[in-house]
Each structure stands twice: as structure tokens, then as C-alpha cells.
Amino acid sequence: MADKRLRVTLTRSLIGLSPRQEATVRALGLRHIRQVVSHADSPSVRGMIAAVPHVLKVTREA
Image (cartoon, rainbow, N blue to C red):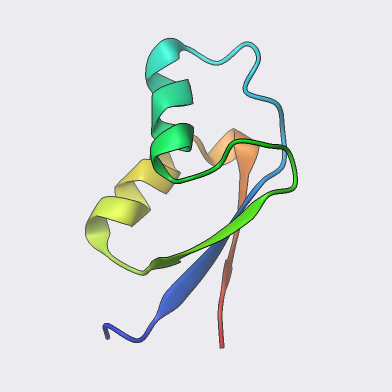
């Protein structure tokens, strides 16, 4: 399962998010709209994504 990866894309601005939500997005490594990062599919990353689903798009890498 360690080889499973998620592509996370920031789709909306960080403006208007609570400081805690903004910190979560930044901890995922996202700074700019349409920036894409890749993360291992783990429970901690899934929890971070679940905290801010309205500003992210998540797809599975092959």
C-alpha cells in the first residue's frame, strides 16, 4: 500500500479560510491556485484532505 499516491490540487484561494484551514493547506505543500503536489495515501494525509475538501481536488496516481 505504500506505493499508492494521491495527486492533490488547490482549486480555490486560501483567502477566507480560517487560520487553521489555511495552515492545513500549506502543510500539504500547496501555496498557489492550480498547484499540484503528490502525497502517499496515508490516514494522516486523508485527514488533512478531509479538513478542507471544498478547496482541493484529489485524484489517484497510477
